[in-house]
Image 1: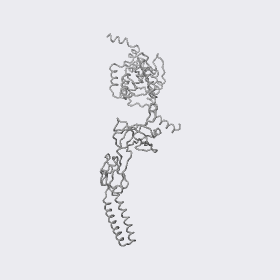
Image 2: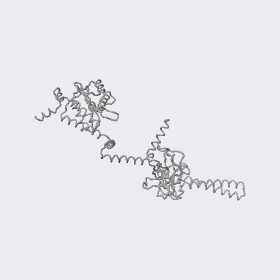
Image 3: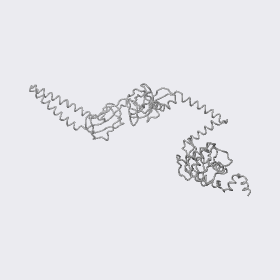
Image 4: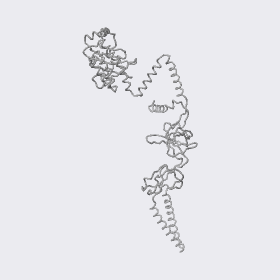
Length: 482
């Protein structure tokens, strides 16, 4: 009994009058407050939580509509309303509600329309417009967390105006729900946004606070900023980086000497070969038959030549001599073709291209590329420099090469030749820059790929980082006529 008397004595007179006039019109019990918290915290997604909270608020506070707005960079945005599954910001109602919430947030106080008698006057232009369009009486309360306004709560009903006591109670409910709403919103953000917000908050608190504990930290941040600016503006080595591929200094392509069929293949890419070794063979049965015929024809002409010489028939001798010479020439040519039908390695090297193991028996045309060889020693590097960087490269520049097969080894190189024409491959537009390797070389194989860096000059580190964006901006501005 004493507790009840004490509670009654501490209840404001306005609240007692409202309770007498309309019992528990907009006053929530402890159980209802717990239900609101459970509705907010029991949903996984922030959007679902605020929608359920708006529905529960409208029902518990006996209002026709409860709306929740959230403060964003471009202003207040209505994110939930009771009895509405999804709020469309372009609708007139959502626009008017957002304006009313923004009005309360800018003044930093709760706004009631129409205002209770004896209350302090406030600017209610947006509330007046919303009430005129919708026909509701309104009570808008800012949602405050951490000393900042994070949103607003608008309650609407038709039958009776909000009293000062009801508005104060709605404000207390909003103050209780604001921290839970803020935490729910932050937990739903991506990790990078949460980390960015936390860093920004910590930095703002450090820079704005004048406590002695923050003074050394602010001095340290200033010194770090000066050092960072110095590092970014300090000249460092600038180099052009591009994909690179190892090639033999001299490559030899073995082609088909004549039309025919592939009979045998003795090597595959990656095999090491010796000078004179047979790499592949073309079918020679037809040429052997032709060879036998030419040999018989040559023997016939030579016999006729001897007979004419014995008869001292100069005319017949001259004719048979010409025929014998022609047959000898065709026979020599055919023998050369037979010899070329056996493709031999012209030097010691390695097969870098031409896997013919699956093409045995297939027809080949004269001049078709069959096998590509590279020598065991002597390599060059083909650097695929982008056209935006080709102007920085000149013959004689030095650099470094790192191969994917040897990431811990940096091989010196020197630019020897820059091709004047660009090449396009797999959507990339580049110029081929050829360089020779310097110093003692490890065991290498043609076809190895890696990355090359060619030293150009010294430039500020900041320029090295932003040069691509800067060059792109310059080109676009010029193309647009700026």
